[in-house]
Image (tube, rainbow, N blue to C red):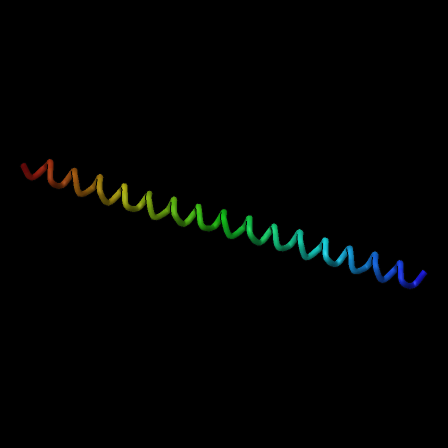
Length: 58
């Protein structure tokens, strides 16, 4: 009976760490997408502002 308990405990532990690993990967991907979106937003804002300045000067 003790061997079964140890096996179940190891299975639950492995399952727990697998869930944490997947959650960590998902969190990393979400943060990467958010950072890329921020960079694109700032680049677009900078290009629009630059275009307005050039248009006003002509």
